[in-house]
Image (cartoon, rainbow, N blue to C red; front, side):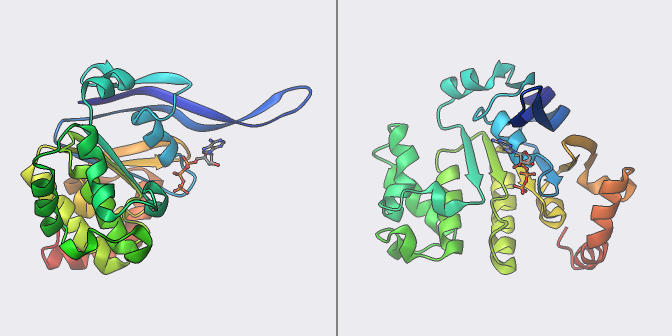
Length: 259
Ligand SMILES: Nc1ncnc2c1ncn2[C@@H]1O[C@H](COP(=O)(O)OP(=O)(O)OP(=O)(O)O)[C@@H](O)[C@H]1O
C-alpha cells in the first residue's frame, strides 16, 4: 500500500557568506508497508522519525525521492480518500481546539465527511471501546486528564475508519499502565479492521508488542528492517543494542504470554 522510495531530506543550519550549512536528516530511505500491516519505526531522539512521518503523511516535502500510497502521490491519494488517513501526535494537548468540548472534538472529522446522522451512534460505540464515559463529552480538554485526552485523540483518529493510521510517539507521554491499555486496544483494532499502521516510537518495547515488523532508524538511515518474530536475528549493532536493553523484559513478558 505504502511505498517510500529513496527519500532524503536536509535542513539548513544557517547561511554564511561563503556557503549554506545543511544538516542531512534523512538519507535514502526506502521501505514498503503492505495493506493491513503494522510497521514500527524505531529510533532515538533526533534520528529523523518525525521528519519522515511528516513526509509520509504529506505535511512536508522530501528533497529527493517519492512516497506513494496505492501507487499515487500522497496529496492525490488524500484528496481521493478523505478521512482515510489519520495521524496522532505525542503532543495531544496542542492537537485539539481548547475551546471545543470533547464531543465537538470527536465530531469534527465525522462532520467534515458529512456524517451527521449516525455520528452519535459511532461516538457512543467508540467511547465504550476506549473506556471513556459519556460524562466526558461535555467537558473541555483542560477538564480531563492527559491520558483521557490522548484516548480522545486516538478515538477521533479512528472514528472515520481510516485505512492508514500514523501514530507518532502517540503513547510516549502516558504512564505505563495507560500505555499498556492503549497498546491492547490498538492491537484489538488491528485484528478487527484492515487498518495499516505506522507506529513511530523511541520505545522498542511498545513496538515489539504492537508491530508485525520493525524498521530501525539510526542517524537518518534505516539500518535494519525485520519481522518482530525474527528479532532474535538482528544484525546491526544499533538494533542489537536497543534490543539488549529490553531483552529481559521481553523474555519475562514472553513467558507470561504477552507477545
Ligand atoms: N523544520 C526543521 N528545521 C530545521 N531542522 C529541523 C526541522 N525539523 C527537524 N529538524 C532537525 O532534524 C533532526 C531530526 O528531527 P526529528 O524531529 O525528525 O527527529 P525525531 O527522531 O522525531 O526526534 P524526537 O524523537 O526527539 O522527536 C533534528 O536534529 C531536528 O533538530
